[in-house]
Image 1 (cartoon, one colour):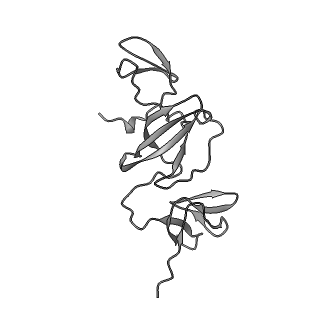
Image 2 (cartoon, helix red, strand yellow):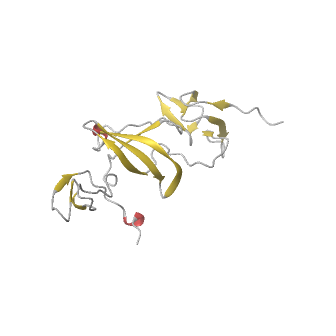
Image 3 (tube, helix red, strand yellow):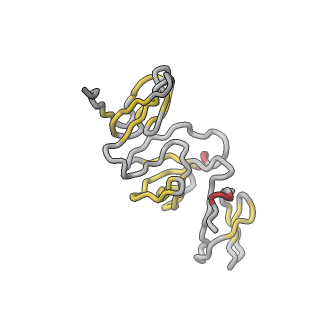
Length: 178
């Protein structure tokens, strides 16, 4: 007889870190593993190691951004404290539905990075550009022309020659399309 299925919701405490290690659909905080989405709890272990605690959706048709994932976003609005974005890709995989995200001003540098992120399809993901590889890849000037990076913190319009401050991504060669 199969064990009963346990359903969980975002933010639900699943177990402590001594009982298992976090897998997909989970995050850790204060020595415990929590669910980051609604779904079924799964435990899998190999060779007597701690079981990997994961939360899976009923249908895995929709890829979800996970903690530590590299995502591609489109900025929808910006103010002095943060930028609102739509997450379009997780890694190189396009999403069927876009997710909302926020990049706070303090998360643009490599210090004080957030360690956790909560999220479900209707939630807001907290993002960071606090690594050299992360930042702006494509920007358009006010004249509508695609800007060119001239340093790690500036982009320039080739038409008007105006410079704008941006935290420019250092895109790794394996992610460049030829």
